[in-house]
Each structure stands twice: as C-alpha cells, then as structure tokens.
Image 1: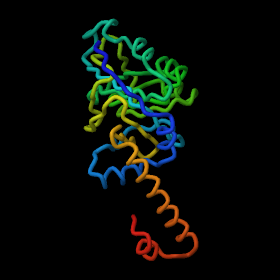
Image 2: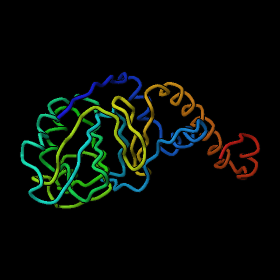
Image 3: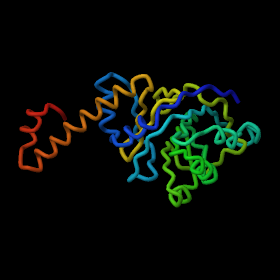
Image 4: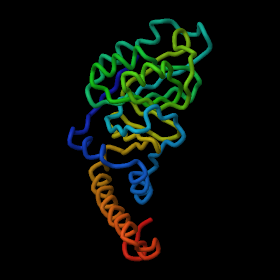
Length: 222
C-alpha cells in the first residue's frame, strides 16, 4: 500500500465551513466554475452537517477470494487518520462495503468526523447508534474481506466524477457532499459567508411581507 502526503487545513477553517450549508457552497463553486458537488449519496444522519479534511483512499474491488486479508489493511489506514479527518474512499462505485461498524467505531475514537465512500458501507444501525455520519453510493452487506484491495492513501482520487486531493475540505449534509479544493478554500469561505448574509436578508424580507420578486430585485440573488 502506497502512502502519499497530506497537508491538513486549520481547525478554524473547518469550523468556518461547518456553518455553511452545502447548497450555498454549491452556488459559490458554480460561480467560480469549480466542479465539487457529489449528489445522490445516501445520507445516514440528515440532521447533522460535517466539515473535515479529506483523507483519501484509493481501492479496487473484485469477486470473492480475489484478494487476501493483507490486501485490506484497514486498521493501518485508520491508524494514520487524525481528528477532523473524513474517510474519503474511491472504490469505483462498486456495490461492496468498504467500512462498517467496527471501522466507524475505531474512526470515531480517533476524532474522525465521518466517511464518504464511492462504494458501499454497512452496519447502518450501529453507525446511527454511535452518531457517526456516513455518506455512500450504496448501503450493502457484502463485505470487503477477500473482495477489496487498498491501493493507496492520500493520493488524488475520484468520487462520483469529482477529483479529490488529500487535504481538500469536505462538507456534507442532507443535501449533498461538497468538495472544496484546498487552494481556494479561503476565498470560497469568504464568498459563502457573503452569500449567507444576503440570503438571510432575503428571508427576513419575505418574512416581513415583501414579495419574492421585490426581494430578488433588491438583493440580486437566487
């Protein structure tokens, strides 16, 4: 298993993004012509929003008995993760579980804030019971043992067509998963805060009796 390098964002940056809905991030990324939105993944705990650092994992899947236990060193991978990380897995969309209750429990103990898997996860009831957020293309019981090989960690991966680099910021909530490239994160955060302020004014105008068209004309946002 090859291990790349990761430069993590500041805690202050992550805290800032935790306050921003993914829909707002989507609008800002769109205005900057950046593709960073993963739609359609199963959201395990919709009332929770997470923001963290992408700890990327590139894996492949085959049929049963394709790989050995040594090919799936999930414990070693978890041991490299730090508080504030998000387990970001590229499994090519395969309907095989890359993580379940044991992995989620171990990650939570290290302060990992959640997982995003372009593949499958399982033991949903256990993850709910410990409050561990998971977002995945599939929920499936089919296990990783002898089916999954972890190739690399902290290298560029692709999740649902979106390129993700180690250290990118990941924000996920009930709407979608948003990937913010680390190099533009500060600018994106500033633009998001500005848009949130405008939307707050828009909502206040509506609540005070203004029409949608009046508010839109005044503030110029949708």
